[in-house]
Length: 613
Image (tube, rainbow, N blue to C red; front, side):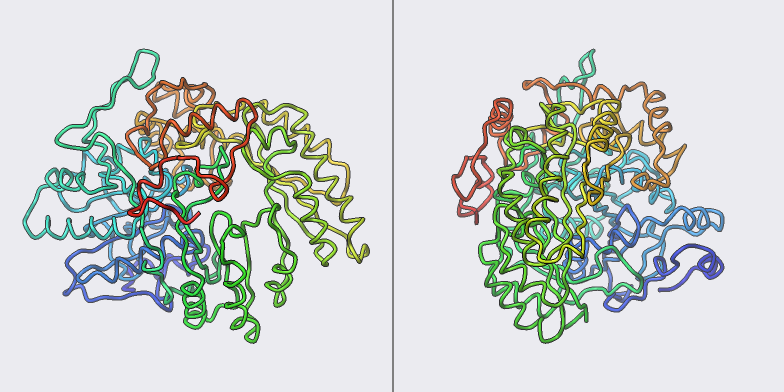
């Protein structure tokens, strides 16, 4: 990286300067003279979080394979670095070249968490780029965003020129090629955006007029200038043929997930009614075990990592898991490389498999019952019973495990105090199972109960439901904490203040742009971090914008109401979501996709019309 002269004075004075220097093994450097399109791949959070994101690594590899295109990485600086850069007038730069990103052609943000919306504003501000799309008149740069949060892009509609909906490998490449043509032919920004809107998966907010009813609900969304009435998400049809970065960047400083990651499949056969990822990533598409074994071994050879993690929404639902683990372990075991399996389910837990994969290095186990009673688990369609969980724990404890984490939600629709107390009761039963099953009580046991707050998310059956009040969530957290019956059980929880703001951003409309702008002006970025999250400032920003966050968070939405994200088509039909909502209200479960296709509609996105469930 060509370093700005002032950086040499700044870096020794900030935390973790290796975040900002680039130069890692595996980074891609290209000739500027041979580059037609410069692409800044931005992650609105710190280096440690962004470099742990497999999607970012995949897109980095895909885009840099395009001739004449140079894709470089950009992350949000920590507050000390951001303040030092502003004081020294160092603009935000890309790690590979050190060049200011304001000079790039395309600036694409990968956004997976609503609380990082302010990071987009922070990075644009540091780069010296106008925050609002309407204030950027020229073709260069085009600012856009992709990722899970773009299934409702409305809260940041004022700041992005377009949103990339769905999987980005082919979509980002098509956008880049269109931009190359626009640049060669001297198009205006408006001409480019009108053409981009014709690409499947591209949503251009400025091409849609939104009107509101007197009570604040949306009255209409009207496309203009030939924009489509609905924007359908993009998916990859065949993951076996998709690009996978076996040769990737090796960070020069510690990151959150510092290991090789192997993606087994996209989508989920389960239908948990609160889970946005389980719906927006449908239909299920899996890689063959032979493809994964080859990619995993090659990735480990190229990286030198001593751990490989199998990732998906529900790893134990992968059909060829046994064959995959056997193939990987034949290579990993002799080389002391460990294999980890996150996202396990209690209803298909296998001790034999776990004992084999953790021969090299044994870790704790994690299960997510999500609710404390069977009644509430049926409401959310978790399809895991108390017996499933206790049997899985009994099997693990008898096999020598002595640590388990249990994840739950508080504030789920229809939740009662009995459901809350059921969490403590279930944790106590797990402790009793340990006492009965462990071959060595002297080692003790660690049972960690963790609760998050229910947040209504777009594209789910629970998108119509409100969130509990802040006071009610705090009361439930205290009730649960006071009900724990063993010192071996520890309890941690997510702050309701953060969940309240996250919910507002998750289901908000484009009027929230005013809130984000005011919040950023007063409190800056990094709002996803406890150190910088400012609840009072958020409430003040809502007041100044003339908006009430309760309108978004605490209101039961009508089933006929036009929702901010209704212009986005994720493949799952709204009628299916409503059917699942109605079943939840009666406490009726739906089978998983492998047992019975429920006709959600996502299969219509596949050329053959049949998913890999």
